[in-house]
Length: 151
Image (cartoon, rainbow, N blue to C red):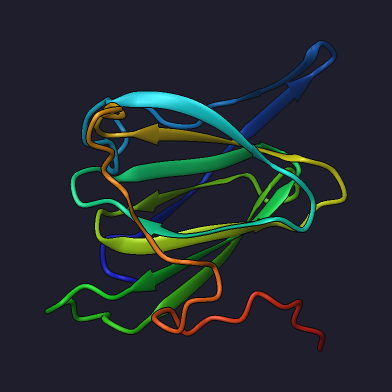
């Protein structure tokens, strides 16, 4: 696992009325501070990659559909520099992934319907000076192939 990345299994509590799922609590070990919560969607087959933040950590979960989330550690001096992590998260695998600042990340919607992700970040979005560094999804700087791996 890339240093600083944490995967939290989420508990789904169903009853005759529906389901409840806690995503992130202020007493979780991975909780740092609250910046903002936002929801984003991704259509089937679409790739949203690559980017990283210099000031904020992300806490990503998927509440509808499925995403393949990929992380790449390119941090100078990191003991896990050069490592990749893949996570499959969503309805069939309810997890939260904590992504530390400076770790490249991106995802692909692998469900047949639009995926809905919720991200709880440690800093609010700065419209005048966004905390995002971006690369194209097929950049040579990240050694990853988004194709389906048959096996």
